[in-house]
Image 1 (spheres, rainbow, N blue to C red):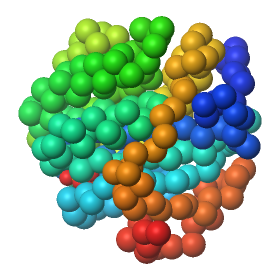
Image 2 (cartoon, protein in one colour):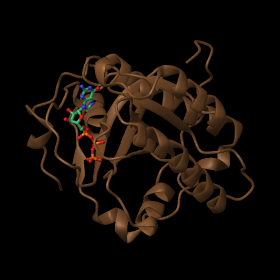
Image 3 (cartoon, rainbow, N blue to C red):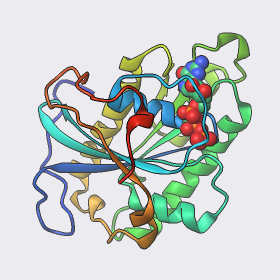
Length: 240
Ligand SMILES: Nc1nc2c(ncn2[C@@H]2O[C@H](COP(=O)(O)OP(=O)(O)OP(=O)(O)O)[C@@H](O)[C@H]2O)c(=O)[nH]1
């Protein structure tokens, strides 16, 4: 997030200019690591304390980043996904990826490597002439639960060095700013890649599977502090 970051041209959808920049983000990770809590924190600033295993949802949220109008489409995946073909479809849909583990859950940490390879593998097979791995950020969540910690910060940093991906250790519960920083960092990663490889964001047509996933729109007003939501809980959203 350097201050001399150059803003690229808007993302292109198969050659035609969209009215503004739309980025598709897929949030991946094992169950209960905080994927939904992070996503909802980002778009509503609120923290969800309860746990309800996710039914997959695409959250649409418009915000401003460094003067850019950015339309986020965020797919909050279900951590219990078993079907490889389904997960492949979702990974193909994404422009960028947030891979989350919980510092209190060693298995979720071990899963990061597999998910990272899966994303790289699927995207390297679907893009011609572009060998860059897709933009990705690794997130260690639940830093506030120090007494239950099973994964050290050093372990996370070493993994991120091995995978050559940016790393953030955060507490979605304690810090909205840290959560927002993750999504912004991913956006900057996307823009960096777009500058160096303009063809990397050519998208395929949306598959039938992706069309079936419920969509939720936030009502944020651009340029506001992000507190303009008219609902009290993310459950007040009704899927389309
Ligand atoms: N203490 C603490 N709890 C958190 C944090 N982030 C999420 N949680 C809690 O962890 C639980 C699981 O969070 P979810 O966001 O539902 O997890 P998920 O990864 O979406 O889970 P699946 O839907 O099963 O994939 C919830 O009770 C959250 O309140 C955090 O930073 N700190």
